[in-house]
Image: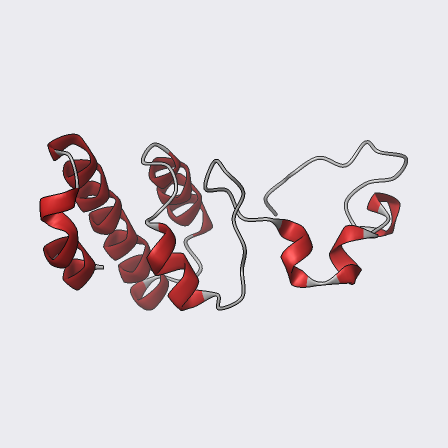
Length: 107
């Protein structure tokens, strides 16, 4: 991430550069908690929520982490890029809800 920021600073607006910089700092905090206090789910959840403020990371970085992942016109990952298993998945087969009432929850 730092190398990407240096290489792309000239083509980013100041706002984008600052946003990506703060996003990177948030990633660093998440990694620090994972490495030093991996069972601190409350803090990890808080940091995951914080990072959402900064939007999607640069597409080039996501492609490095997930080769073959495709993106739509808004820069969002296309889930069907993971194969036919995702496209035809029955939501009722998921372990956290039935009949379309699935809700995201933290254990």
